[in-house]
Amino acid sequence: MGYQLWMSPETGYRRQGTKFSCLKSIFLENISIKEIFEPILCCKVSDSASDAKFALDKRQFDTTCVIDHENKIIGYIEASALGEGSVGQYVQDISPEIVIDEDTSLVHLVNLLEDVESKYVSSQGKVVGIITRADLNKPIPRVYLFGVISLVELHLNFWVNHFYPNESWYDVLVEERQKGVIDMHDKKRRNDQYLSFIDCAQLCDKKDLLSENEQFRVLHDFSKKKFKQFMERLESLRNEIAHSQSKINVEWSKISSTVNRADIFLSKSDLLIENMAQVQAEERKSDLLIAVNVA
Image 1: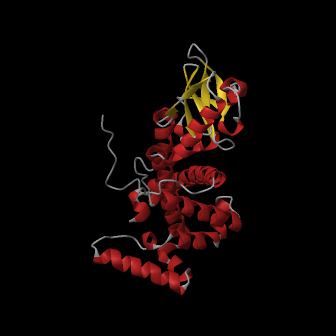
Image 2: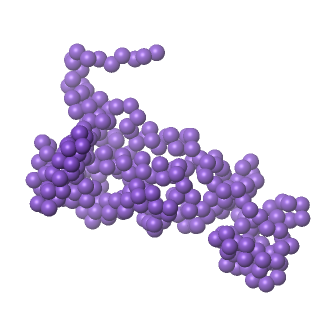
């Protein structure tokens, strides 16, 4: 069924819960970094610097906070800077630039850690935890990323069908890729699974089809090179998440640029599709079936 799951091809009706804004708002409004940050472990200002370094290295920590004799946090230390003497010799001030509030939306995590490995987390003005790039590997961030990627692919399906109507895209594929689509379609049929033809195409097929379509590229402000790069990075990120690797082995800069570009693409694509749906709905307004508002 493909895009029919989120937009009716008959009436242009956009189904509930299929917009990118819906997915994004769930995470923007309801899920914050409070759900994934780790409570801070501290060392004392009087501790041996070498002992602190050993403890940090053993736990694979790059940094931690330092408390005074009254158990108040007075700053932080970096494992790489520790040498001889006491921890107090290496304490650095915790500046506002390296602290984020616990109520910060999870959606902003990728951009917040664009240039740094970690940030401290505050609650009611007090440092209570730390969040690092490694926290992206936890289930909740993965759910958001996979949701974004899945929506991108659904939108790609729509645009392939839009610019290559009546499955004419199939004839554009090279013979080897045509065989791959047929084999997948037959396999699903044998297992009593119904998939539209476009759902049996790989992401790389959609990349090739749409990168060659100038109308699509112009509509979404892509050059051929930039679109291919976006698709390759998207596929790499999807594979890392889908295969349940314990660590997402993709460079942070590529994750960041891919998620940001997906945001731009989905936001614009949603608007374009919504406008098209309204035109279709206007053409079908005399249909016998009408929507009823339920109180």
